[in-house]
Length: 339
Ligand code: TYM
Image (cartoon, rainbow, N blue to C red; front, side, top):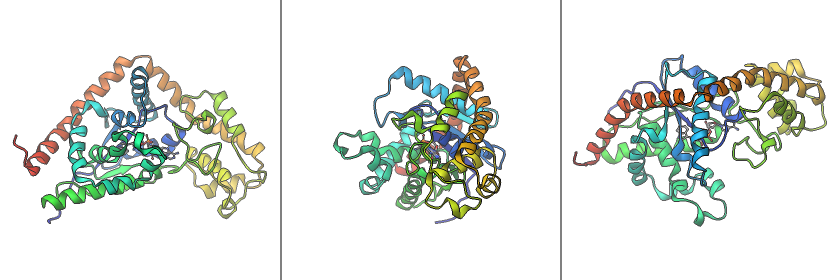
């Protein structure tokens, strides 16, 4: 097959299944913002179709979460002038291509996805078919734009490998280099932010304990309290990286500090080495409030006028369809669908 060149284009998405967390911000959104000023077209998405795969969400809550996520994107620095900002269900080609990919992906590939195994748990029989097919929809999200780069946190790596497998199988089956083999970009400020209650678990909006995460909408007192109560060990902080080995909670807090302050872990340790957590935690809380408060107050301001958010998303969907409609049309032609 011949080498095809694709427009450098970034796509990424976040589920409106709950509020935004510090993990989403440091692992993904900060990188989304910086990629707007690199040589890429950028498309960022609230993936509402994904958000209904795990459990029923109250419709009013889903609508609220979707708009609040859009507000979070904009408040963090994603500009509707520089990026296409969309809600997944408003661009129907995502779901249409997902069906095609359901017929390309193999049951065995999907069954090996660790997120499927984690989320379906022991009772896979009761999980939705949508949860099983989730990664095929994710591949469609990316490939309906012929996106070449996808910035994500570490936990999405396996889904992006599957996206490459789906693209390669489609190209091979139909004998045409039609879909790009997408590059994962796993280089956010902190690609794996861990729970504040358990250094072995990732920080997640679906964790039943609210104390395990910092939400982008938490106020200053809540942020300070959660950091004060964060699990740690009794030792002082080391001044070198090796001193964080086997200290996952200490590593996580230093990592959060470094990511918020745009510093390397090594540089932070040079400054804080020798400190007890009683000193370090208030400094971290102060830094977190300093960085997050402007974002949460801008989110609140934007949420006061949801009509404006809806207008931005309607415009985004229109811009998106200029890209997605021809790609879907060509996909159908390649497959042999009569148009
Ligand atoms: P979601 O909604 O779980 O998370 C959105 C983004 O935030 C990153 N992230 C984290 N990064 C570091 N530390 C954490 N604790 C942490 N928690 C979340 C995730 O890696 C992700 O980049 N399947 C995706 C949504 C999706 C998508 C896509 C992403 C649907 N289609 C197409 C990219 C391209 C998800 O559930 O992300």
